[in-house]
Length: 511
Image (cartoon, rainbow, N blue to C red; front, top):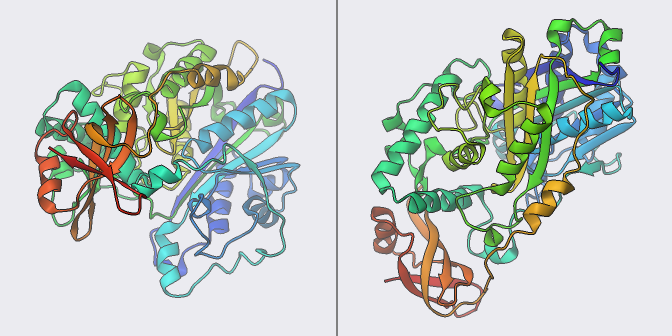
């Protein structure tokens, strides 16, 4: 093998479940994961001072429009580097997206294969579990005392927000409102009844809870039945039809995970045991037509399909060769579409998660897939010669990154394909024309009903006007209209669309 072959040598995870006032700071969370990754590689924490590459996954609080309610570091990579005594020549902070961990691993491996870096730490965390509670008590984080001293970090990834101002005005700026649109569109395409589809979602995620129940780092290590996941109760309210709370990713966690990546030559210089080494054999990154309003439809993902195909092809294996799978699982439809695009059955005996998934293991903002990679590394070490597949998704089934891993030594040089190759194919796809102020007769393409803690809030419709042009609208907020949309299939129903008096929103009234 080439000395420049990139290898993953250590992975660390940490979950804090204590009192919010005593919670570790974000920098401490990152440092703990980094130190555990070093220990996992058989190295001491002092080895972290030797990293020449550092990539930190962006915190959720830095998402576009997220504001700065919680005081924090201006430059998280620089803050962390100072705490571990490192001076990396390449230090980056990712833009938003759950694809970021896998994308950063892909980039780090490419840089190592090229000779740009020898030893890189890729790490991330989320801390909304304690941060929101600390905020109510007026508590910040003491170790972020450099907020005014550091320059802004170099950013990596795509900085664009996930939705347009037009979409945002109609409620499409939040994942809990957008993913149900995909779910209902998928159900409508398949002609499945609402009760039958609810059961399918419960049957899909019940095994995920069983995996989480055995995962010591899981936020909710509780096995639940299919019926328990989909039945509306006081503890499991409807959030965005058809998703109950138990079917939604949980973001208010305190979790971190990190991975050490280096060249094969460096691993041997450090004395890393051969049985610790895991190889990234295949990878790919791409995004679907960026904004939800522009998608070809709401029941497919060309980016999932093409990145999966490319990663497997680069690795020189087929889906049948894969022994361990972790599909990004923020909501059921992410798994349903991901499985369909890859050619997997929802009841595949290999299982579709190694962690337990975002709603149960924990959806730590943008960093979930780092936990997937950490667990996958151990699975592969425990089963030498097996292959593992990890997918990672950002925004609204928008950004996709895929990795294929194994302890098998590669038989060829690591060469990451330029993401532009796949991207050009996706960007050329035909898609519907958008009309921002439609009038008259229209048809529902997909929809959801949004609930608050007190009950019904509003309906959101993606529709087509009489000329087939796509639009977004809200429905009247009376309970009768909203109940009706939940009690019988709304996809394909007709109605009338017009604008509010101020012209800022479209209103769709179902027939």
